[in-house]
Length: 142
Image (cartoon, rainbow, N blue to C red):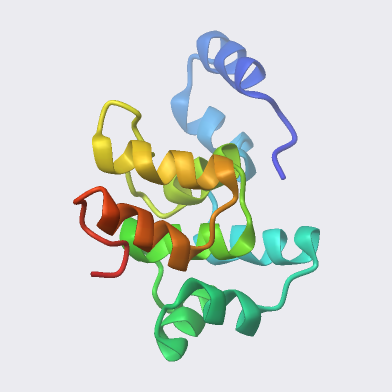
């Protein structure tokens, strides 16, 4: 978890004339590896990797690579099934995408809007794929 909120970081950044010093002092406040965030979510939600990977409908070995950090930047279409399988809310899902260096879900995009709705409804990855198909959109996992 971060120790400082965004406002504190902005304030420090504005006041500090030496960007190197600011970066060094706040290293822990910046984006962390995706697999660390996933591990934190597993602990918080009392979930098991195998159950999440199965529910996500990802290929099992690929899913384990994501959780182990050996696939450090998986695509949105691989992460979103994990988010759905973990029962993440929209804020947690957006953070997951951000840690992976992927664009966050955007409600002006029809595909993204459907996925946002699925997250808000608590749909599974399987049901989200069904909804996407019914609405003429590309499925999460192709």
